[in-house]
Length: 185
Image (cartoon, rainbow, N blue to C red; front, side, top):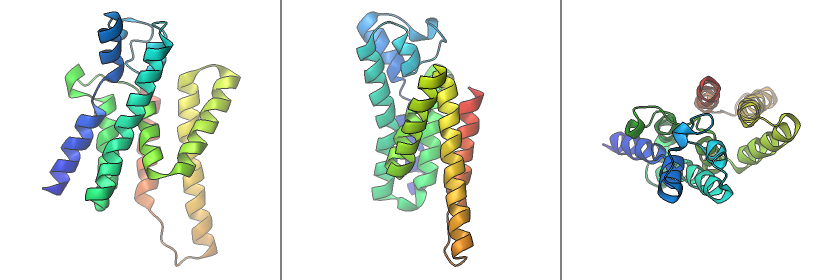
């Protein structure tokens, strides 16, 4: 029963299309008919409303953060299930015929809940790449790849130093899945 609660709660949290809801409510526009057609903060910014874009970003980060924290408290053994279902809810929301966003802000919320160091790495990398190349999607892909590689190398280094220390291969795999899904959208 715990796994079903985790799956449904996480998926439903992740599937809330805040970008669509905010632009519809405050401007009457459908963000899916603007710019890239995406429902995320970057495309909401294309409506010309920075406050709606910031609101979308913060709400999308929170919808990644909240289910992970709740799962940590209630069912800590199901954290990875919660993270995956939250992310899948964002990119495949049932409310929008399974056509959602790229999941970048939701991914960041998941990272913040799981690791402050990895989330800072993601933000720092995203900002640097964005300043250099001026493309949010490139920044997101490069940043998620950086988090994956750094986490993977960290595990290899720890194992080389002390083979008796266990590490979580499942989390590395989960980061890989997130990277692939964000790169495909």
